[in-house]
Amino acid sequence: DADVTQTPRNRITKTGKRIMLECSQTKGHDRMYWYRQDPGLGLRLIYYSFDVKDINKGEISDGYSVSRQAQAKFSLSLESAIPNQTALYFCATSDSVGTDTQYFGPGTRLTVL
Amino acid sequence: GENVEQHPSTLSVQEGDSAVIKCTYSDSASNYFPWYKQELGKGPQLIIDIRSNVGEKKDQRIAVTLNKTAKHFSLHITETQPEDSAVYFCAASSGGYQKVTFGIGTKLQVIP
Image (cartoon, rainbow over all chains, first blue to last red; front, side, top):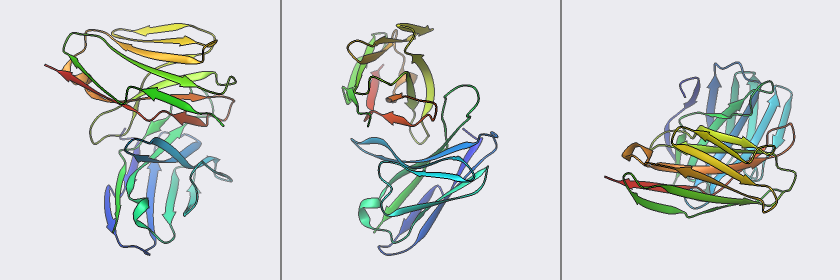
């Protein structure tokens, strides 16, 4: 969905490096999420934020941190990347008012060597 | 927490045939069950959803059924077309904070 953008789309990094994945949305939604997708494991929630001052850990938050800089921006950081963090990362948004639909960005493919 | 199991993990059908994907959930408090379609190189996109107060919902060639007693729900795609080839995720959530638990996904291949 073009309303949710992620940068970069692809990233190759080395073990131990700190990296940041960025997500921006123009949908005006207050809720934002970071997921990780691995083959055979589906989509797993890393962090979620229901507004700028509200940040919550998901099921696999270890090794990750997030920052909600504004309602429209939600960044995911890997403090010290390790190879098992190689995955496809998705940002998603939803609106606290109205439907429960989550809108996903196009994903960032991260490879940690 | 919620646990969602999805099967099969892969499914191949001939064009024009029907495809069925099944999911079960563990939390009886779950009341919202969306299905997402992920095409190659893209993020998942909602295709249909159902709430616990209904047993079936239909939208053209796709339908979803829900059995609350058995805690399972299914996606049915009729008259499959090559463009239906994708990965499909079921999901379940409860409460007002929309924390959604996804299944592992089903890779559907429609053979022309």
